[in-house]
Length: 216
Ligand code: 3PG
Image (cartoon, rainbow, N blue to C red):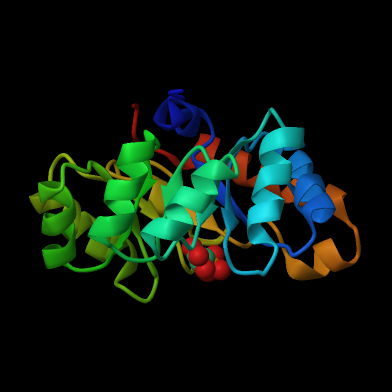
């Protein structure tokens, strides 16, 4: 199975986080996001039932390309792919996670902050990495500095991205997409206000459509 996630992200370069301990809620969040035009999401492994949530989204929301986030170990990467993950995201760079994802034939986006980590990712043959935690790690100026040296690397900044700075991040040509939790506020989920999530997704898409200087 190979899905061109990068192509999908060119049209909608925002990757929301889906966090829940209830598979039915994860499905509703994912449907709300997809209704707003965001069809790539990261189901984060931060709850006891996160793998069940991922499986439910993979099974019940075919319009969503669901990956697994917060993948810390190779075993988790394998379990996530077993549950239907179409890609793997890690907060840091771990060779075992990268190898497991590759063996399973899914894209992997490990997190980096430093030039050393980025060089290691480059030399593992990766060309897209997560930049996390983006705002605390230097934000847009750091991304521009890193991408001036690592000319072929593409980045997914996550951590502190918001509607207020999304356009600025997406204006960096090396940025493939931004990730974030602002699209899925815990309060909206607790209130069952999925329309708010759809609206946040649409708003993010509008910002992305107006704010990028990259052409492809
Ligand atoms: C992540 O896992 O990528 C971050 O927790 C997201 O950071 P944010 O909550 O600042 O968007």
